[in-house]
Image (tube, rainbow, N blue to C red; front, side, top):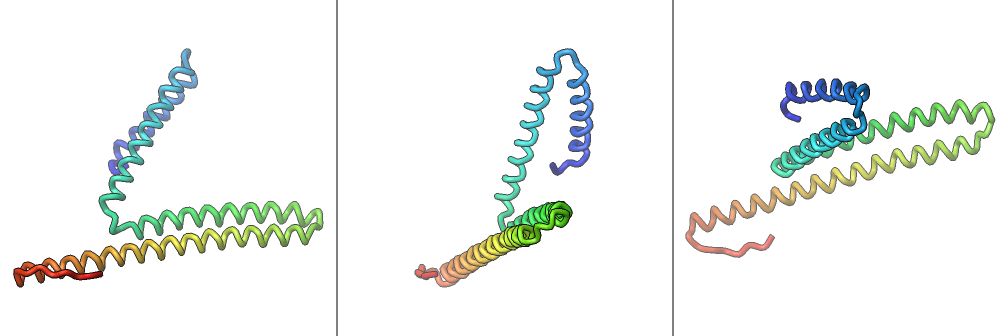
Length: 156
């Protein structure tokens, strides 16, 4: 996922591979083989992303914030399309009360996604701040021990 050149060549290879599979004599076997290779590649990418995420856990706020923004933008677009389609069909039938209930339910769902996302981000920020405070307290205690040559107990 970090080498754009090999990622592009892999995509080109998969495109040509799938056309060969679709037009080939033993297409089912090749389709299953290509699907297996594709699944293996996707799992390898996921493994790399999880390793990077676990290594750089101090940057989890940006990662979660961008993930939440992608999810919320998809929800917002989906809800907008659903509302537009439902508006056209319901205003022709003149079921205004049903339409208002549906709009309220969709709005509550969207605001629920926003609220859950904000709660997750706040929880993550608080966890990071607590981890940073613990690291600072340990560092200060270690400096005290090294400077004075004594051990001390600190409660956090």
